[in-house]
Amino acid sequence: MSRIGKQPIAVPPGVSVIVDKDFIYIEGLKGKLKQAKLADITVTVKDNQLQVNRQNETAITRAKHGLMRSLLKNMIAGVSQGYDIKLELSGVGYRSQLSGTDLKMNLGLSHDVIYKIPEGVSLSVDQNIITVSGADKQKVGQVAAEIRAFKKPEPYKGKGISYEGEQIIRKSGKSGKEATAA
Picture 1: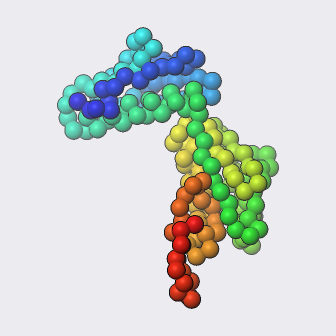
Picture 2: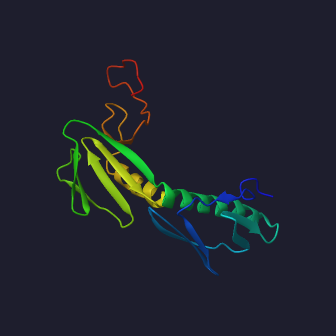
Picture 3: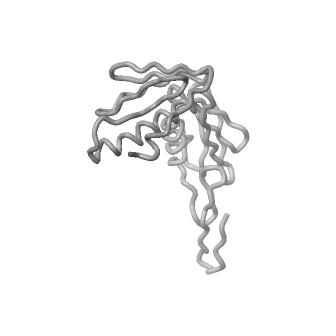
């Protein structure tokens, strides 16, 4: 049996879980999330614990067992605490600001980059730090990756958008000086 899949998930107070025929709805202080049930996987709620079981022992069902449990655990953590990812802008003249439902970024290009903020995710800007937050872990990670893709950090000067704490391996330029980690 899957070691991850067989562990029960504790449902904290303030979080409600509704198991339907086709979907699982989880609602908490940070929002509402919905997950489709996977084939041959059953989900039960008992004594403020969520239990995920499988109906057969095929390889694909065993793989889905651990996946379903991880998705549900991330959903419960998301509606109770939320997720956030911080992005750093580094480079001369690189700026970002919020304007309504858009994130406007000046990234050294001939034009400003405008990113439309999707529903269910909120952004905040503090000088050169962009914070992406929300209840859905997948959506928060996707939005952060899309923003980072506008100007990935380059290896020579380290300019661009990087995750907070990300190590950028620096290359030496034409002069052939020692390379350093930024």
